[in-house]
Image (cartoon, rainbow, N blue to C red):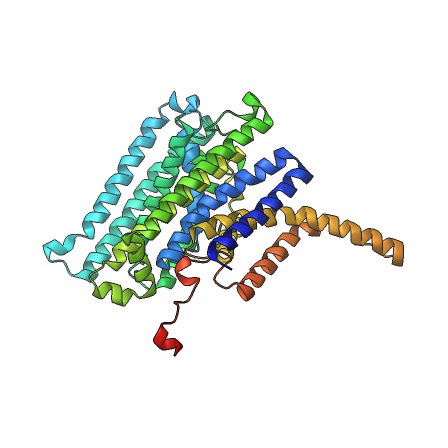
Length: 430
């Protein structure tokens, strides 16, 4: 089967699957699922270029998604005038100046080699300076945070356009990725996995416990939309407009990544992935190029997280889960095909509909088993049988990825460079 024929058949089957959801559950439910799937597709594109282009194992996708989500809340949520009409912004600004000064001193300590300071002593000075700056900033922040929580609840947002919040979310995720990459990309690949996993948990803990900044578990809602809301134009039309916006963003991101994949830059990244020693021998700066792709992928993850949280209209730090926002993204990439931009989009759309529809499908199956068992054998089903349907999605996803790894280890739409072996020459045939 040719490459394009396979892609057409797979997307046709996917369209039939989505059409069945629209038919059985209605347009409102189908639109909601489609928008969320496209948000995941944007995140999956970010991960596929990290892993598929450069072989970077990011185990903390959840953290970059959460950063993007928070930044869009900070940028686009309406201002909290109880905070701005007090002296707390000035006090918080003073704390920010302390933090900037501490960061500058710590960075300066790492540059003491120009003064002839030995490496170990330089590292010790930098660590001690950073620790002292952290203590000073924490001591200055604690009373301000308590006053904000007691008098204003939280700082609120800046009331800027939502799309600007999405851009800020991607930029913030990229900035964190640059910081992590500068430290870890020069080390073994497993250090990056450990670092990203730790960063994700740190981000979640910070967002969950900083009530003055995010309202913590009290949640922030309703978040503004970049398109007319359902209250303004109707439930169906509001979601349809959001779907059109997300489809446009995914198509644009896919087209740009396809162009990069076919360009010399994309070939260079795959060369570094396949044999970094040879790439370095050809004069390529391996760590710099890896840092580029790691930052670019994280920007897409942050933008996808911002779009997803905006659509749900509620920001809940406790809602970011490794199962939903890291493991599920990896399943999408493995199923679609690492290094394949089209495969990432297909994997996201397919895996998300399987993930969402597994619970209602399991409920229908359990009801049929309960009725048949009671009618034929007098069997009484367990009282918590319905609650077990929620766990069926994990089983179905596990079964799906197992079958894919068994019968299509490169993914359903793998990287085109690896799909077909080179044709043998006339001499090889003879």
